Image 1: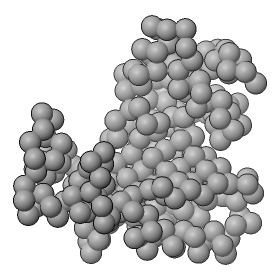
Image 2: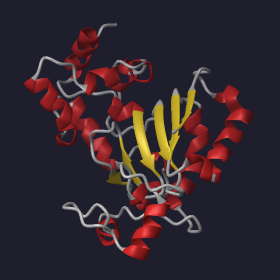
Image 3: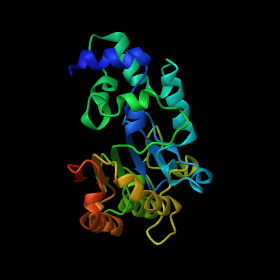
Image 4: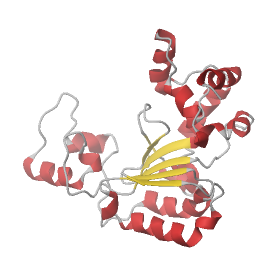
Amino acid sequence: MSLQEVKNKLDKVGCGFCLAKWNQVTIHLSTGMTHSCHHPSPHKIPLRELKNNPSALHNTSFKKRQRKEMLDGGKPKECNYCWNVEENSNSFSDRIFKSSEPWAIQDFDSIKESHWREDVNPRYVEVSFSNTCNFKCVYCGPQYSSKWVEEIEKEGGYPTTDNFNSIEHIKERGEMPYKKSEYNPYIEAFWKWWPDLFKDLHTFRITGGEPLLSKDTFKVLEYIQKHHEKNSNYHYRLILI
């Protein structure tokens, strides 16, 4: 199917309809943040929503409202990157590119007919279990590097216009990572959801911090080794970055 054909299919549902809002997710378990697609800013996962529904790591009430807007023909404000591309150029936006991916387009009909309140298992999942890392790369940040946090707590953050390195600012936004020794309710929710999530996965990416410094990474690998036949795709991709 060509990109133009994908766009035509999406636009028949709504001019802002994008399958990534259902079938793709990045979950920062160390900070309790989530977003679908890399363009919208991550938002906080309410702990109250996780109590009876661990899939709220992806299916937050906020995200469901964005899905409703798309199904109703609207364009969620958080996705304005794609709207700007579509309105100001002849290029295809990431709404089209992402929706055309195998992990997305296979569920076009079921998503189109779904109710916006429904919980869904995304096909493309990226997870960060921890910010534990032995580097402090300049393109990264304290939320994703324990070494950065250690240095800032000891030496203070260097000044930036957006308070990028301010621990207090990170705390105000609710993005302060859980320490390795602390109980993390988001990781607990992930493992409750994981057996059900795994059966529908197409692509699973583990990021960090440094993925190989997290025991949860090896727990994932052990689970896949023992239960790989439970995945309906049989050709899922596992990526460590």
